[in-house]
Each structure stands twice: as C-alpha cells, then as structure tokens.
Image (tube, rainbow, N blue to C red; front, side, top):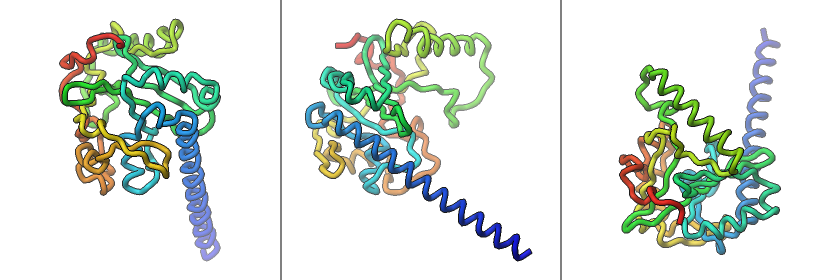
Length: 260
C-alpha cells in the first residue's frame, strides 16, 4: 500500500513537471512566433497594432495569454499595400503559410500559420467610417456554444457544405484568396466589428514588445471586455465583446463596395 501511494505521488509530481515544462515550451514558441512577425514586418513602417486578446494579455500581465487561440494584429485598410509588400517577401514566407480572406473583393483578414509549431497570427483590416472603424469576421453560428441548438433542414446543411467547399477548396484552385461571400454563404455567417475611432486614431509604440498599442489601451479594453483585469473563464466573444455589433453585415454600406 505504501509503495502504491509513493508511486502515485511520484507519478503526479512527474506529470505536473511535464505539464509545467510543456507550458513553458509552448509559451516560448508563441513568443518566438510573435517576435518573428514583428521583426519581419516592422510596425513603424506598416503601422499595425496589437488588438483583442493579444493586447489584453500584454496589458494585463505583460505577456501573451497562455490558452489564447491566436495572435491578434490590426491595421488600417489604407495600409494594405504596405502590408502586402512585406508578407510577400521570402523572409516571412519561409516562416509562415499565408491565407488571404476577402468579402466582395475586399481583403478583410490575413491568416499566417507558422510552418513549424506556433500560434497563428490573424491580421484584421479596418475601414474608417465617420465615427467608427469597421471590419468583419467569418462566423459559424453552429459552432457557437451559446447559439440555441435546433434541428437544421437538410437544404441548409447542403448549403453549408457547398459554401465551405467553394471557400476552402474550389476558390483556391483559381486564387490564393479565400472569398467568403459566395452564392452559398448566408449573411448570418459574418460578424461586424464596430470600434469607436478614438481608440484606433492614436497609437503609442511599446518598445518592450516592438509593436504599437492603442494609445488609450485601458479605456479601449474596458469598452471591449468591461472588467478586463479579471479573467473570465466563460467569456464568449460573439455575445460578450463590446466591439461586436448586433447589426447584420448588410446594414453596413462600408462593406457593399469592392476593394478600394
């Protein structure tokens, strides 16, 4: 009995050491991914800034959030060509596989997946309105745990399959850009980001992380997350985030025109 207890204790401590080591290793790889990007794409020339969970982690604890899914970067649509110039270079292509996402011909997001192990980088492009900055995100309500579950008709399921087939496979045969607004995709598959201009109009450079922050970063985080200093395990971006508009994408004329 004593041997069994000692063996169990030894196993638990060994398991904990492995977990801690893997966590440290994972955090190190994520930081290296972030550093690769900021080194290859200088923010003082392209003028991008950290956003969402990445900004939250760096502001709250001076590091990236351990269990976050990605690294969030934002940029103005008017600086798109500057961004393109850098991400098309061999220096960054050897570190990342790059995907471009568009809506009606307007690129609203880039996805950079590290070729080795690491956290993907999502670059969101914002358009400027009279009082707010706007962007969009692809959204699947059927994968949202807070969405009311119901039995979908067969025609709706077939439509989803065709939309994904077009977006992720057929479309890429002709172009590396993923056009998400195709004839099979319904409007509820998009969410609109609506951010007051005052949060993005002024940026401040963070020397420690070699990247820009919104100048009013704490006020901005309060707008997005309310009590952002306290971690919320039940957080749902689509229902809880102050930056996600309750309006549908068709209500915003800023997305109806093609790429400028």
